[in-house]
Image 1 (cartoon, helix red, strand yellow):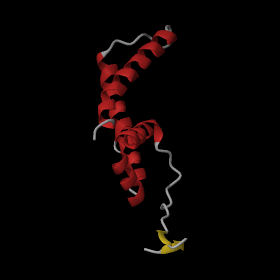
Image 2 (spheres, helix red, strand yellow; image 1 turned 90 degrees about the horizontal axis):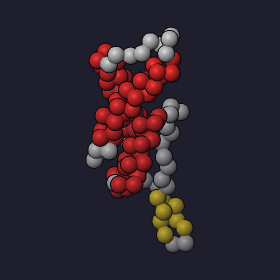
Image 3 (cartoon, helix red, strand yellow; image 1 turned 90 degrees about the vertical axis):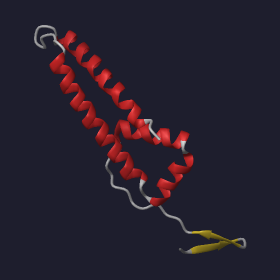
Length: 112
């Protein structure tokens, strides 16, 4: 590790590794905020080691996959209004199902 001397103190030259331009998504952001607010030591350690961004990408990907699977199951189990004759009813039902699926994923985002 390299150091720079400033006013008699040796300061380590720390730089963050380059991260891909891929967005961490909604669920990755929720996880990032949870880690930052509730486990700052873990957050800082993961940030310095360069493991935070891949972790957030994986959490976001897993959450999206679980939501999609849950949505498919809920759509099969729930009678849906006809999309052509009742588009607002269909959209309302889809939003309700998505909210239920997201509610099932949230504990995963807030796990320590």
